[in-house]
Image (cartoon, rainbow, N blue to C red; front, side, top):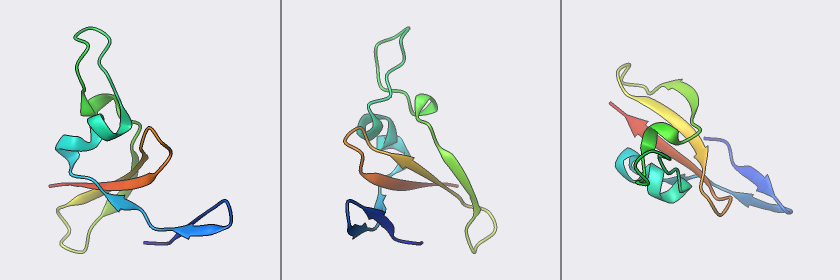
Length: 71
């Protein structure tokens, strides 16, 4: 995973489990008022080496770059 430059520093993406991605990104479903991971803006990065698991990039509410895995 390539490091990200932010304000002159190199940052690595932080792993967040998919079940916690909505809370970290503060993605709230407007109908229920609860966190919902389907409201997280994910960027699909393709398949992992196993050929089954997919990985996604997203940004946390505080701007921290994160990634998650979905099997």
